Image 1 (tube, rainbow, N blue to C red):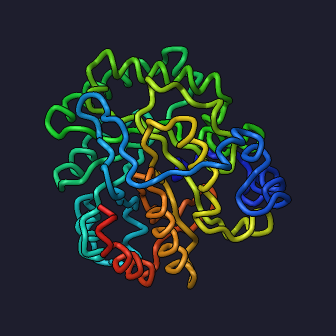
Image 2 (cartoon, rainbow, N blue to C red):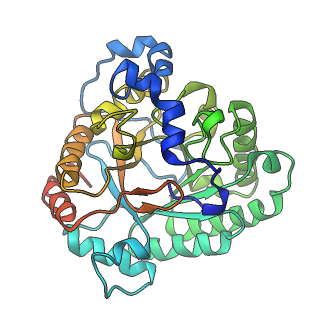
Length: 348
């Protein structure tokens, strides 16, 4: 959810949600009009555990047959609030969470803007050296991608990704996240509509394919759960996992109301389990604003994740997003709550 501040449109988070969220308020909870009118058959969806997905080709990150991979995302300034003396090096972030949660996270998300692929894969290497799966986020302007303006840096990134994979194995990669946000109220520059997004995704995927990186690169498409879904799907050949982004944004209480994770993701989860049943699902981003109710919200969220047997990974975001003024950093009480909840061996 973090993004370079200069890329955000000149619109406040409250204005953005006011324009896009009134339908959700009228319908109640997290079900927007688009959600209710898109794929209605999913409302009768049922499934039994365990959900075992077909194996992915090559050396990609495979979904566990039972249980859910658990990961985190943070940055130095945010974790420093709880650990003032923590060194700035990335590996110490992972050490910190391992100590505080009493378990090493399976996944660590790394988010960097375009043009710094050297740093991106270096951070992936540092993460993998700790025995943790990197989740690489990088954004590109779709129009320039489709015109070939980024072919050269993408080829270099793909070459580095292949070399990384040859040494460490599979890693997650995501680009142009939350691309399905309403184009009228878009906060991200790649919310340009389905056709251009898919064309850019295909071009990037093919560059990785031509350079042998897709043997390891595990492509995750990430939807913001309050907006239309299917029209942005690039096709089964181009997607390995389906990711959901869902936050309890108290700043938007006037429009959405306070929402548990179950209210945020129940419909999108059902929709993808029915329409793309062979694609593993992950909760690529989730969190709740810092406050006295945050620990309880997170504990309940983990209960929701465990109740969905097709949900094979989840990443808790511990970040302050200055571009949209959302503080999802974890309090000390929330870290303790997560430590207790993660004693459950279901979370890997």
